[in-house]
Length: 96
Image (cartoon, rainbow, N blue to C red; front, side, top):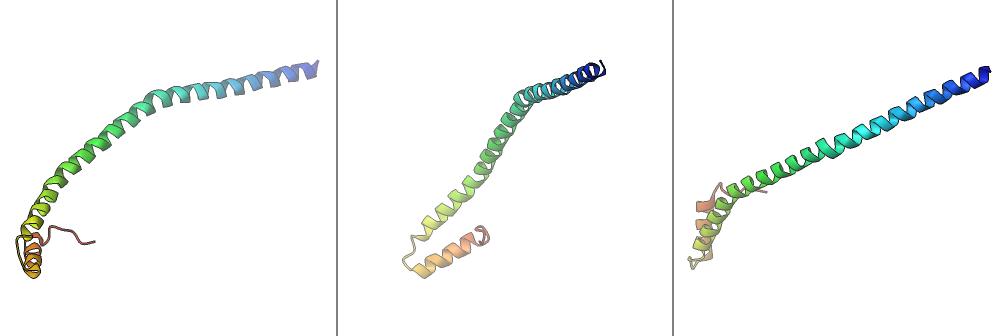
């Protein structure tokens, strides 16, 4: 009789543990599918907006460098063209 009662208690404990695990898995699945997906979409959109903003800031500088480089080709002497590029673009092109 005592063994049957002990077995029944073990069985109830097992069901509580399994029920808790299932509940946690279900709640985590709902959390991940709703909240995390929404956050992922928000941050992806935000990253592309920042990338677009950086591109807009970079484009005029690139066009300016291209225009001045093309202007340097009007010099017949390579040294004069190099001096022109150095003088005009000094401090605008970063060193690597």
